[in-house]
Amino acid sequence: MSKLREAERALQFATTVHQAKLVADVAAAQEVFAARQSLGETVVGYAHQINIHALAKLGELIAHAQGHGRYWRGRSGARELDAQ
Image (tube, rainbow, N blue to C red; front, side, top):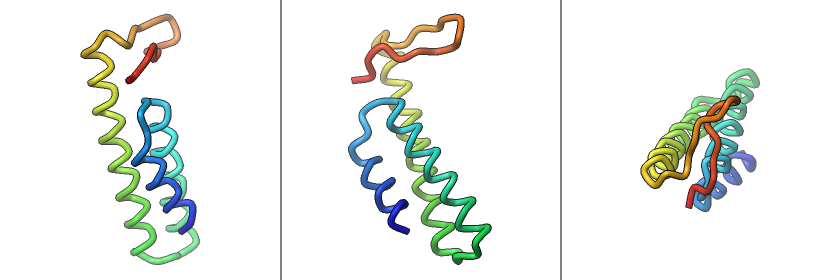
């Protein structure tokens, strides 16, 4: 549960695509862990909620970056120049 609280707090301060993606990944991993360990629907739901919020923030940051020309597509995919 403490990792989920940390993830939720990190999401509040996430200002880059990388930070939001990291929070989404952590929340998704914690959701799977909670389900496999039978920690209860409350914990699984909390992890899922953080993951959904992180993915929403990720989408907002990507849209903002693309709208301001701060993303480009290279040979290895989209890369972030500056998402602020």
